[in-house]
Image 1 (cartoon, rainbow, N blue to C red):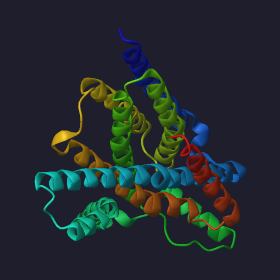
Image 2: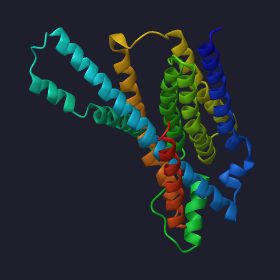
Image 3: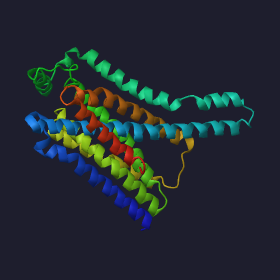
Image 4: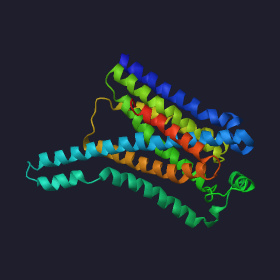
Length: 309
């Protein structure tokens, strides 16, 4: 067996194990269940949730969106160059420049955002009774009233939260497959190890936040474990696909299709981050500056990792 192949198989199992361990920690330990938390314990969990919100925010902007924009721009340029070559260079330079300068990446990411917005609006239209608050939400908002404080609006409903958690997992799963695919397509041992470590550096933090999010929205333990297991298999699946197609290229629009899917996934991720995660963590008005600091710390972690990932 070739050394590169051995390293790739090792990376496959490393991604699986790290994702499972980090994702199952919040699910398997009752300490992370906010329903049973009181006093300082509840406050610590709330601040931990703010850190995870910052991690998701950083992952959305510094990793998923940045990589999607780079990939889409690169593929659009390849298509333009191919069209120019096929036409023998007779096409208008101004038209090509205008086509290249158009913000296709931002448009595709926005389409992902509005796709989830449409699906959720459709679900709420078909199920108008989905706006009732959950027990946890009532406790959090009620606690704010006991302290004589006000709440900045209602938290996401119990029907919305599992739906958005599922969308979060789907968007991250798309991204994880492409990350694994990139690892599987590397041609040297050094490049494979470096990319795998970069992926694991931010993947562990993100999947921990996912597990914490599943617990906080009240997902049944067996379903939470199933979600984390499914998510953990995505990067190894990408590595396996990369091994199967190693040596090939992105002809036939495959590279463009991958870039578009990454853009849509980034848009859905941003939707869940801004309309589910951040509003939930910032709904209660206690310690606003401390919450801001925790969100900033989470974002700073991902921004720092982006230097290598």
